[in-house]
Image 1 (cartoon, one colour):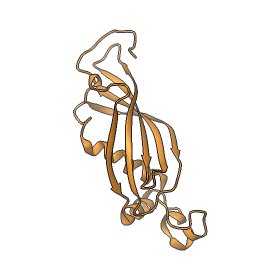
Image 2: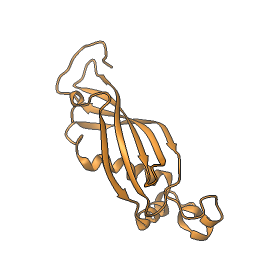
Image 3: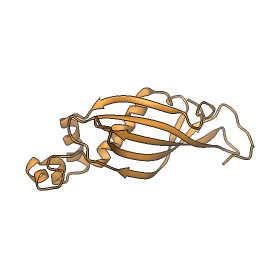
Image 4: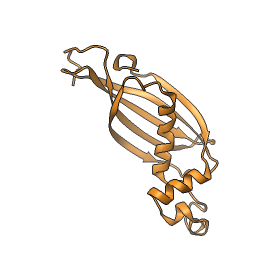
Length: 152
């Protein structure tokens, strides 16, 4: 997708996927080795009562659903930032997560064939509980260059 292909208000429902215990643990061992992400006994002593996924695992797991669609593969230049990141509820092994991506806004570059697209990303579990929300700004190629008033 190029800049022009993103329409404000468009929504993309992403495939549901089950959280794999081993992937969750492997991520925690490497990137977020807190006891409640790795050890059942430690986790039982928390309010979660079981091992929970690292929030950063949940972020990467959820974002990967969009990347795997390859919809933005041709036009994507780079990520430009995350805002309003919230982890609402814990994620456990075998949870079924699904996400919806919504185009919130976009701004065209004044000088380059590119623009910034602002997306919201909401992930819920099998009980329709929110587990993750964030907004991502992505830098994407444009098919044309322009000098309009909505430019960046």
